[in-house]
Length: 280
Image (cartoon, rainbow, N blue to C red; front, side, top):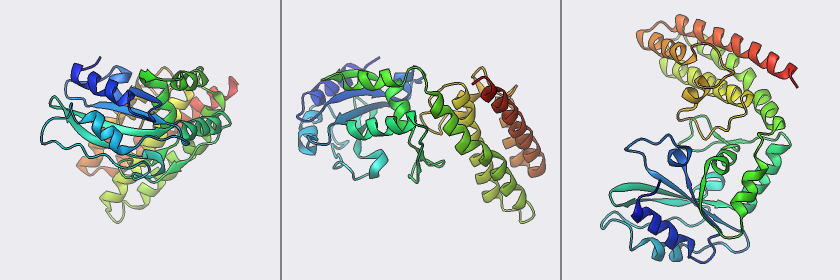
C-alpha cells in the first residue's frame, strides 16, 4: 500500500504537534490506483489546537526529493473546502497533502445526516465542491495515524449510508439533468459548442450524483464519477457505452443526436428514482 519513503514521511508528520490524524486517501485508499497514481495524504487537526506549517515543513524535509520544493500553505489559504496543503515529490512519486479540520468535517457529517448538502465554487471541481466529498474522504480513507480514534469515530457514522443523504442528493440534482440538457438544446442554433459541452457535462455530473445516491455510494469528485455510476447495480443499461455515444456524437457535430441519448438516459434515471423512492 505504501512506498517506504512516503510511509516514513507520514510517520514524521504524525509526530508533529497539532496533527490529530494522518490518512491515506484518493485512489490508493479506494484500491483503484494505477502505476502513475499519486499519493494523497490527509492531515487532520482540531480547531482549538491546529498544527503549525513550520512544524510540518521540518517533518517532511528529510523525505522530499532535492529541488522539488517543500512549500506548504497556511491553514485556510486554499479556501474553506480544500483548506490547504502542498504538492510534493517523494522518491519520484507525487504526493498531495491536504488539511482537514475535524470539527468542520463533523459538522458536515451532521448536516448530511439531516439531508443538508452544500455545493461551493472551487477551482479544480467543474461540478462544484459538493460537501459530501468530505464524507467520501472519510469513508474511503485508510488511517496511518489516528491519535484519539477521531477518524474511526467519523467512519462509524457513515456506515450504513444515510438514506436522508441519498434523498437530499436526488432532490438537489435530479431536476438539473433535464434542465442542463435543455440549456444545451437552446445553444445548438448558435452552434455554441463550448456551452453545449458544458451543459452536457453538467447533466452527466448530476446524473452520477443521483445514481450513486440511489446505490448508497459516496462520490469523491467528478473524476471517474460516471464510470463509477455505470458500475453500480441500480443504473441505466449500458450507461458507459451510451455516454461514449453522447460524446462521440458531440465530436462529430451531431448535437441533436447526443441530446436524444442524454434525454433518454434522464428519463430512465427518473424511472429508477421513482422505484427507489417507493421502497422507502
